[in-house]
Image (cartoon, rainbow, N blue to C red; front, top):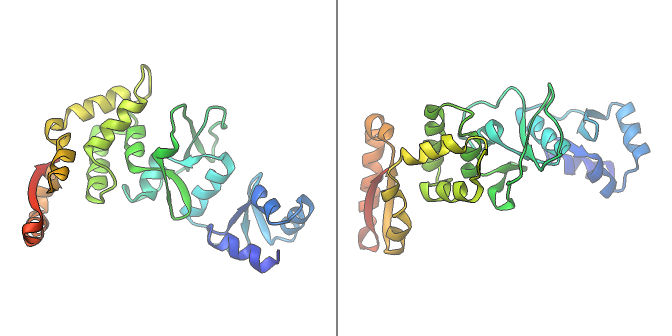
Length: 244
């Protein structure tokens, strides 16, 4: 494989390549070491390299940590990647299977016994926990107010809903699981009688509009616009307005 093909591969992965992928592309350890010695590649982690001239961005840092740990972006890193918070954390945060490594001054590693493949997604070429799992993982690690803000954003972006968060909680809840008590309190704080009825409304051809109290108070024009748009859809849908 030509150097141009290798660079093309790295360019769609934030300028990164790991040793395993390099081997698959036909490079030997000696050829990898030569590229590092010539400053054509720089070593970010023992088995992760950045192509010379690639942009050093938070996304590159996070993908490098994911490649290094063989895990997925999670917790605050996942919240940032998913657009649920504005800034990335000081250290990239990833989740791995038990035995997947320890945290250091450059990375925060969370070892998980219940990280299902179905709880992950791919964002900007980076494997990450999905919004529902991210909120579940952050329960107990951030304040209830911060958790509510993340949940509100995820609802707005249609990345989760109360039913799904409850489902994930029931799948992973166990005695002693970090954040389980905090998430239970958070779920009880929502009007689950209404939230859990959402699927029934959808099946009955209703269109559910979900608004937070903050949106109703401070984004009333936007809320009115959403209601007007739903009403204008005509007889194809009936609209049910449900507080989140």
